[in-house]
Amino acid sequence: MMELSLPQIWMIIGLLMLVAELVSVVLVFIFFAVGGLVTALLAAIGLLPTLEYQIMAFSAISILTLIIFRKHARKLLEARRDKQEEYKEFVGETAMVIRDIPSNGSGKIYYRGAEWSATSNNHNPIEAGSKVVIQRTEGITLVVEES
Image (cartoon, rainbow, N blue to C red; front, side, top):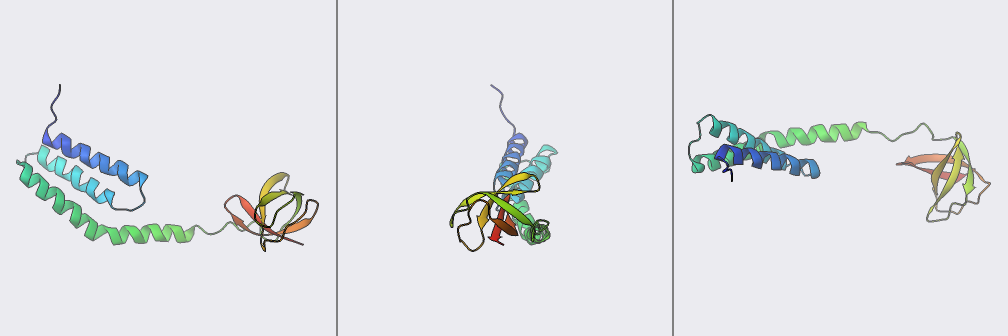
């Protein structure tokens, strides 16, 4: 059986933290990933010879990167989110209801040669055959009002 060296263990810790960041949305694990990967590098080149030094370095690097970069990273993420505006191309267009739209559910409309899921903007049921005006989009569902 192969034994792992301390730099290899720190590398694994760093990579596991990277994977944890990818599956989470908390923007914390990335800083521990940096701590683990930098500690692995420093231990591999001999600057951190003992486990105690490595633990202190991992802790210090992780906390410092968290303090220094988290606020900046959050601002970048929020700026990207603000740029993702609602899709407005369909707003104001007319379509035909082809499957009844219940008051609290979805039906189908025919618009631009395709069927779309649709819900009622004011929660009034809309019968098939009615003409509707698209008010907004919610994902791939169009929110409509009877015209």
